[in-house]
Length: 196
Image (cartoon, rainbow, N blue to C red):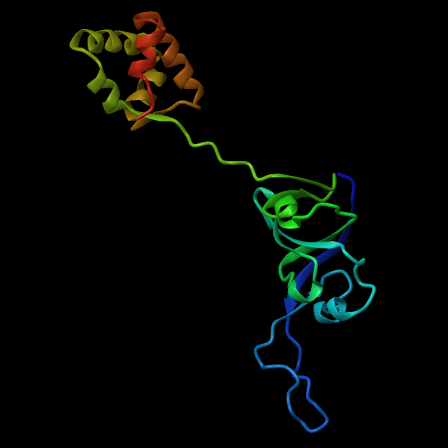
């Protein structure tokens, strides 16, 4: 898919004094929201209404800054229906698809590479509550587990004793799993240490 992306800057909220008609009536409600481009102070309403601000048929996309990067928000082809407050606004020229919302909505936008990607789905941590290990073990296996733990360093024994659960992403879990595999074999070790 070939298109051009134009960065129209970051837009921030601001207030301005009421605009009155020659007769003294307000031309906008008192609680009207305004936003301006950070770089030059251009008012959004002025830009949205001005001819030539955006190419005919282009797609406008607002992007909000998050810990995952710039996440796309509103996607549209009519500037008057956009309001990019607290967002970066980009214009996609030359998009030939029929559904811009599907192409650009709720994506991660990389302003340096000018690319869109799917929002990464957070991986749920896998944990095993220590109580579950003891419930799964037979009496004989419990004795063996005590032996496996006693072979660990004092520091590792204390970490195990103080922890409420085992996090499978923790490097110490891999060491414990290796000890369980040696003692019980791969299948049974997996059953004993399976996520809770």
